[in-house]
Image 1: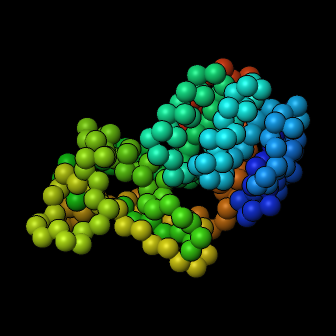
Image 2: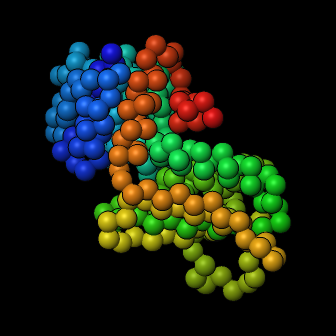
Length: 243
């Protein structure tokens, strides 16, 4: 049975992950930690760490897991290029599942987006709209960026070059080669994402709406169980779900 450590255990996501672990007979709760607790003190109590905290905290956990030979599931978003490089380097030593969204539905949506982009992307104006609760600090969401990345890759584009994050001050017609992002923050919205392909005369939309954090928690626990006996490497939820 896979023993899991949960960081940020007293937070909303942490509590939901613990609930998911307790409902899953393939895993057990090995340790819980909050800000200020020492992960090094409990490395003998778990096999996999699940982290949905902040980038700076995640980067502190990585070397501890690497040194102890523990796997890690990272659902944290908002990393800069240096942070992403650290995750990649750590994955060369231990198994890492890194995904901006652990939801089964979102990861199925990514497959649908790849298909849609290849079929109609070149004839479409592509816009991504995401909404989250008032407490979310990064924008656009990691999931929205991943959706944009999937679409861009399917079209042979570089998202860093074609993404538009705001149209204020742009006084020219929309460039079809761009991918637009819009962000909404308010209330207690768990997470909503819509990618629209606007064509002349019709529109195709791929939408995912999460009504509970349990969908993300269940996905992360599924990923933790999947990591058992895996070799070092950087894995995604696409790998976990065999998509």
